[in-house]
Image 1 (cartoon, rainbow, N blue to C red):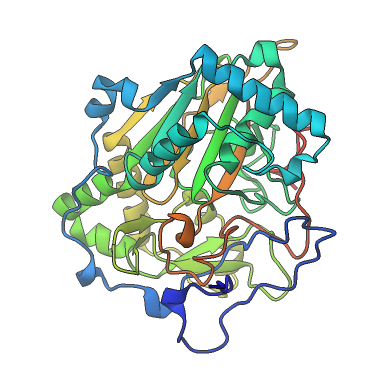
Image 2 (image 1 turned 90 degrees about the horizontal axis):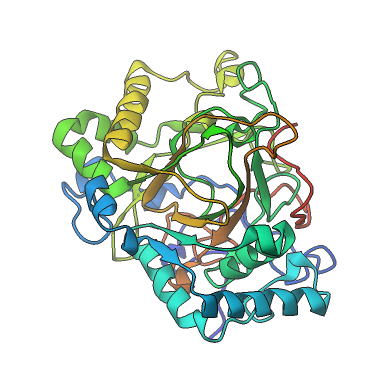
Length: 407
């Protein structure tokens, strides 16, 4: 059976005119797959607030204390045998001369680890929503090999996505000294040392390799969006309704493909179509607060008092229901952006010549037909769904050169 990746089967039969993927130039995209990019949801697939669950139960619902009491459930400590298999895969891939942009589970084989990785993938996508792999010897392997290992593990979870207008499938998360106070519409907060409030990325799973710590700060945070939803429904159902309404404009921050508007609109909370009907989340306050240049011109409405309050209540509820923890050098953290918020506290870098805080990031698409969530977007079944794609910018990856995050 052939699959039309342009539109998920659950979404076929909708009116004509849905976005379609442009023809793919294999000289630019060797695997024949281009990142789909950012899209608004399909209106007919969105649910009214009255159709949302009053309370969510199951493995996606957890409390901070449960995570504190059972770190063995979300921290996987590499064994020497596992590290040896991983290193063999890394060195074999490098020796093959295959470009980093072409890494896949077919050329980065992990025959013994594969089964455990698939179990962890299921926990990330359908359970707790995050996992930390601990003990990668980055000081011994070096950043390049550690990056290849991270990308190699990532492709066993899904497909690597472009993260910005440069086509980077390996992002650099470090303080680039950008003035986000005066340039929030051009700057991504991950390129600064400012706090990142609870949010999700434009992907199904985000992976983060911790290469170097800051002098202080920079703690990671995770919160179950389903625990947060339950709290909102109990304490502030009016706020939950605002967050579930399709009234939220999201800034593309200049990463616009020809023919697109410089923003798109969606609810923060949505219900998964297709039968399972889980609550899905899509949120980053820094991409909502940066739209004044459009609202000042009357092109879109400004944030209402109800929306501003909802943003504050959402962040406070995430903080109250989230776990904050310090990662170590060599940790690789994977977070599902479907049902899990993540955050970062502000940090201070050490003075030179000590290295500044540095992370390498992957975005991973998990299409519906390969066990990913069914989403109310036209690309739900497409392998490289989500991400950020500008026109035909080809994929790129360089673990050693800082790029992206600022203009």
